[in-house]
Amino acid sequence: MSTASATQEARRGLLVGPLGFAWRPRVLAVTCAALLLTLALVVTAIAVGGSEVGVPGILRALIGRGDPVERLIVVDLRLPRVLTGALVGLALGVAGALMQTVTRNALATPDVVGVSSGASFGAVAAIVIGGGGESVGGALLGAGVPAVAALGAILAAALVYGLGWRGGVHGYRLVLVGIGVGAVLDAGTSYLLAQARITQVTAASQWLVGSVSGSSWDGVWPLLGVVAVLVPLALAGSAALSVSHLGDEIARGVGLPVQLHRLVVLLLTVLLTAASVAAAGPVGFVAFVAPQIAVRAAGATRPPLLLSGLTGGCLVLAADTLARTVFPWDVPVGIVTTALGAPCLIWLLLRNRKELTT
Image (cartoon, rainbow, N blue to C red; front, side, top):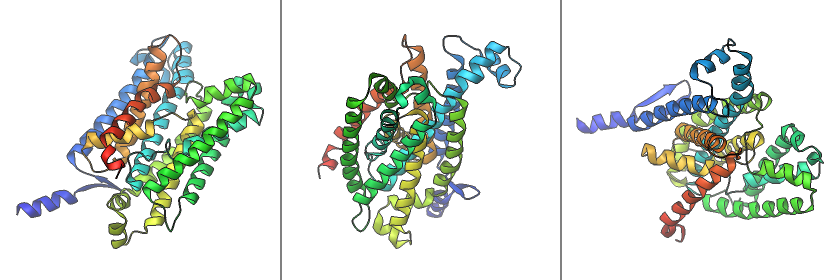
């Protein structure tokens, strides 16, 4: 009787259309808590700043009944920045969870395998070779640099996948090839910066650190559209992702086309990363840290996708709010996330040093 009850409990799930979510009480509770924390951080980020706006003022501005100053601060200035930060964190968190799961490697993130390096190279090439640095602000607000950055991320991922193919693509090979390709692309970026004019270097540097300070509604809508399409697609494949996490032999045994599944997951990862870097530049370490926090908070065997995305959103929102309120100047959010994420990477390397050397 107890065995049957345990089996029934293990098979429970929450079915929403084609989407299947683990019903485990701890995962569900932590995910709901992360959602509430995200909403609280959104309100806090809109409220605090040089001119503080209370919750009633935010609500008045959102429904169009606030005074012109409140509407300007909330709707035109802060809300696009806050939504961009939340969506970028969500995209990077899901992308990191996808890549870490499909490769079964906690170090395999878009930051490590060259995707972010490809985006950076594309953006700097657009600014330097395309002459975008003539107007420092115009280059970063225009559509040209984000589009080329997204293209650079996609091409870098295709190169890593092609070079890593040996009758299939496996986790550690993907990481090693990605590190090499990323190093070459970083060298190319440095070369372009060394040859650029000072205005171009300034424009490129503003983009390379990762920032949401120049966000506008024109950038929010494309990012929202990409996230609204790709995140549900990723969640729809959560069951297959769980099977692939058990190993290639088991996945093939239950009929999962391993290489095709891996290609689809990597494509979703790259597109989510490309959308985020196109909107805010390469915000470092979010794709690495968010899934690691999520998997430990949920007590799961792999990073839960939705929880990882919400954790990423919380990280970016908290980092950006700290960056513009604690410091006397507006620090780019990428600097804060990198400063917080680098110690986490070192800790993970030290914690798993025996596994990584075998």
